Length: 412
Image (cartoon, rainbow, N blue to C red; front, side, top):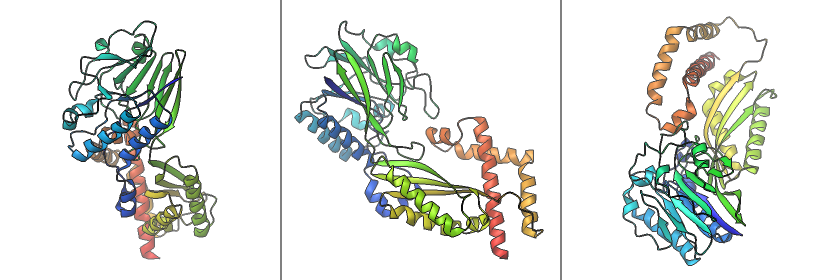
């Protein structure tokens, strides 16, 4: 049996982004998360005794220049070289704009495919690796015409950095369809560019491994690389863990809780359970507190206190840090207005939120804020016009609750 390891979108030395990183202990723990993920991939390659490492683009991260990045990468490739493991690399859009790509003298076990394409035999085996790199930071046209035909009677693996037919949150690069890939005659398409893992087809294999290390809450969950096992021409695919840090969303329903003591116990239990099921060494949690709660406005009023308490509960697990607390509590059914000025203000804010003019203003302001965010975050927050409208409505509702809670707290 012959094994190969497939990864992409490493974005080496790209910083993680989270409010939790204000904590210096966490910063020290995760500052080199992308390096840790790549080291784990190299460790897996050595442990599995693979015959080659496939990197389908975006090994680097943008135009940032760093001699330390180059030194780290060379050291990792040297580990593979000493074990006799070759590396097959194509350049993606981020590699094409990174000056390190053209400056580092990589070890001789690393084969970098050029913009014109090419193919290389894997030692003396009947396995051929094909690849085409980006020549520049943009590739608006399909790169498929640059691939040489598959070698007859052999296993043919092709490396391609592509957005396929398009994906939310990602710019279009080297567009093509799964049907077009399937018709090319290759046995395995080692893709890159989209940061979410997806197996698009199995005959032939068309695999997007996803990024090996998520960088923010828009890339949640444990990340991985893909291990190929080739036996008598047949390919089996399995996920292998790679991420050092995992972003996760945690929803906690406050409805069963009668008071603050019960709510604190429920939150602590939910965080402990999340820590026990964590797929990476460290977890950064965005916690959403929802459901009905009789003392809802007190929680809204004392948001800072609750955020500090939950931050402490997360730290107690030894592996979790709080990124952000989202409060979406509502009053229990059957509640009646108390006739106070605060209650009247809440009713007035509810009325204003439904006015078309207010809604249009909110949506315009939100669109301006979203335009300053990276594409993948824009897609996570508002993938389409309907989602943007719903987000604006939700923000207005949240704001009204916060104002109401502050007013009640002042009059208590």
